[in-house]
Amino acid sequence: MAQRKSRSDRRIDLIEAARRAIIRHGIDGVQLSHVAEEAGLTSGAVLYHYPDLSELLVEAQHAGMERFYEQRVRQLTTLTDPVEKLVLTIKSGLPTGSLDPDVRLLNELGGAAGRNRVYGVLLTSLYDRQVSMYQAVLDTGAALGVFRLSADSLTIARNLVALEDAYGYRITARHPVIGPAEAAELILSYARAATGNDLAR
Image (spheres, one colour):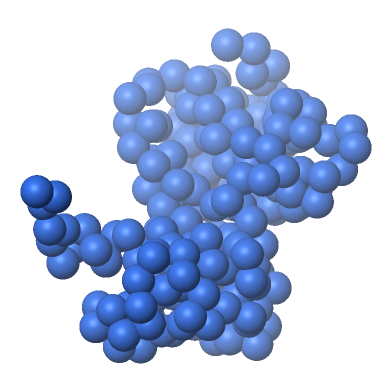
């Protein structure tokens, strides 16, 4: 006999279904029926767990964002070398390819942020946290004498996040000559100039 899913497991499934529905129909076009179809449930079953569809869509967006801050911070705690930390941070902020679902979700969110205050707040919060993550790596490297920063760490960190976003979009837009490896190298070229380090490790 199949074990019945817990309420929390069902909500996790619905968040994943909502993410797929957003990618398929767009953040402005997704409807309750689309989420239900992706989840293999009735619309009523979805509403039982999420009476407000907008709450589910926000949770789906937040789940997609976790990879670009929380997971990266956890990875950074396993390293001590600022060079390794900076290289890892840069490479882990890019899409894995043109179909990367997390980045496609962020692109959908970015497109709607000007029309939806909640989405704008989510994106701004993610950007600010990513900047602080980079800034901590840069400040540590500078304090240890590993980096010779060409500008203040906040400026460099903001530029690094902006480059991530720009090249991430190019990758998901299927640019013919900019894939994940090429984008990483382009961002690293800026980081080398900004830190005075060849970032060779």
